[in-house]
Image 1: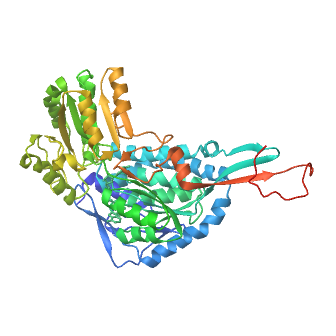
Image 2: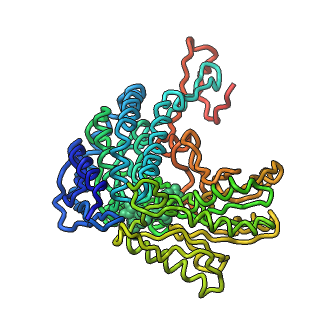
Image 3: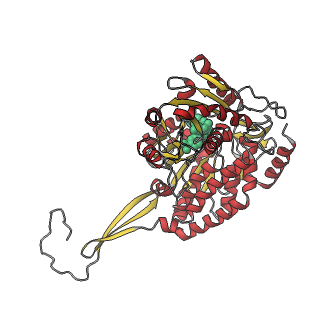
Length: 520
Ligand code: NAD
């Protein structure tokens, strides 16, 4: 059963937003501007991770319903691409205002389905909203290039939308990640089919309604719920030209290969193991608080969570204090006052965190803090674990694999070079941070470390969306990043036209030239 506060938020969300279900009903699809019931024969449960109460059943949308959604997106494309950029910009202005106005409702849906704390859920919405804000500047960012390449001859490069595009989202940022794609795909003139994570469909349903209220015409955004079959449909459907995927390595590799083999553009953001180097000259209090916040916030279920700290030299003696700070964090339901960490997404995720954390001792490491047997008196059925801190290293499961839970691995290094080497040898390259008060140390770190998103005294260095996502190595497949200028490259193709407008037929020979023209 939902807690009292969760129940009142669930009633509120469900009564206000047509596509959502928070009290055990069914989530709808959004096709042709309408919220429609699926005729699926298979449905998946969405449970509140704090109590296991059933919030919704999500359809495994049928092939024919999926076909209809893609057909609808295809039919909407010609008129949408013909709208002016200024018209599409107006939709973004309105969407920006509506998202801000209804942020609490979206955050409530996120807490109910995903479990993170309410404050963190608002951050989830805000980070997506910021992409919409950047999309509002599209009239500047889409300014085209043109030069006179020869006498009376101009070349003009224009960007054109691709057509129907698709986005496949993970469970951990139910608002932000759909909003990495929706504004950038549509403001550039494409239509989009979104498949939200089957575990957290509610935020996408609310966002779809807001897009419609903002003036997005029918069919420009369609939302279809489902799992692997819909994903495979997206990879195979020739009407879909590009796929944005965010999620695990396994699903990402499958989608990248299947999508690109079918001739599509695919961008895939995958897993991570983000290291922070803790230098002995760091501001200790600031660094330990930052590391604890970034390791355990969102119960470690962020792709940019800090999951490894490399303590250099004397900073190794600070680890017991880090353990003390971790112990102070409050683990509880996401709506509870003062909660720092909510539950994990599923019982399976909790079991995995327990098993990987527990494997440290069998593999010769040390468990400094074990939060895996945490039991919440108020939420006895929730998927909770508390913060854990372990000493582990390369070759051990807890270090080599993404745990995606609140378990922080501690490594020891004698020098900065040794610490950087750990990061550079790791297969992932999403983010890395350093805590230091020495500018030269910071600069050397930035130059030598091989990860895509770096923080100097910043624990979660996700670039704001005027920049592009820049994870590297095993954390991405495809070579065009999400949002920022990269999104323009991903969602458009260039067309160049060269034209000659000469007033008179001067110096024109009587004979045709067969040589490669040389510009003069
Ligand atoms: P997931 O891969 O299980 O699911 C993501 C999406 O892929 C879902 O929509 C799901 O329906 C679909 N999917 C899952 N398995 C599939 C399969 N076998 N074939 C086809 N489709 C499949 O990921 P998740 O558990 O929802 O999300 C957590 C993962 O996402 C973590 O690894 C995290 O690091 C990663 N992530 C990465 C970033 C980033 O920007 N690098 C951001 C957020 C999350």
